Length: 371
Ligand code: PLP
Image 1 (cartoon, helix red, strand yellow):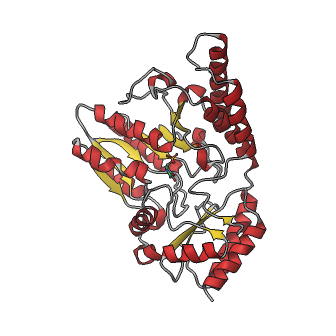
Image 2: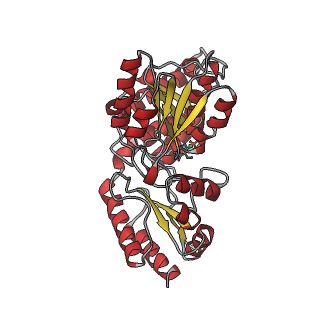
Image 3: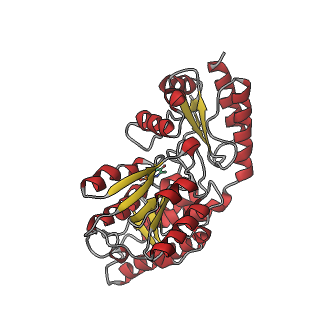
């Protein structure tokens, strides 16, 4: 059976250019970038150029970008750096963070940090609540740019502004971390405009390969726990994954192929079918990415997923990037105030690989399971 793939928020198909770059680099630049001989120097040059190319897409300084194994590691580098603190303070984490962030809460609590949650009704953090909770002891605020289940887009610019004002008032820095995995390519995302201190990105969410990600650090430095051979400015030791780095640079450049209008048309067509079928759509129309739609079905999400699969459409019963995909998505929906729908929601996520024909097949499948 030919399947139509609507689980792009979980992972995307690697694009041809990234795959070609991966293969070419594996063959031609296999030398270790730390080796002093001519081939090692060529590999080093390649890594440097890739960093520059990505920095140019993101409009940031190359020195602010660090290659990691993925967003989970990028986030872990930032969160674990707090363990160095002699006097733990407070941190604020939104209630809808991916587990790559939220799973740090119990660890940091055990080490004496006070971890407070910022509620996110409907998938949005309230600026007023952030302002209220930002006291003198807060050292870090973690609010993702785009939610992976609901597709809601935070007003990061405004949230950062509030943090900056408090910084001035208290005369001490507050690190604003924005997990931006789902923002890249899916929104008008600009690190330059946002003024965040740190952000995470993942290769496989943007048609790049697995096992490669990025950590952005505005100041280009961080006291990390993990140490090694000093690669990546000492922030992430370990021999560089040169083929994946080359493929990531290609995937970043291919982001210009994203056609938001096309995806918006897919989103509208799907919303229209859901409206006709009286299937509630939890993703709001405003301040959301068109790439992600959370839709309530009359079946438990696992059942709906199977029925749609039998009709040729692959969707997610939640956030497939966690091992217990359904449980985690349900918890997230509950924390966003959608508790009564939590067990019945599926996530439809588009990519530039989808066609209107795919969306028509999906529409028919949704009609059929509702017949
Ligand atoms: N953050 C968000 C919002 C995600 O959707 C994902 C998905 O897996 C991650 C972090 C983790 O990314 P990675 O698979 O690169 O570790």
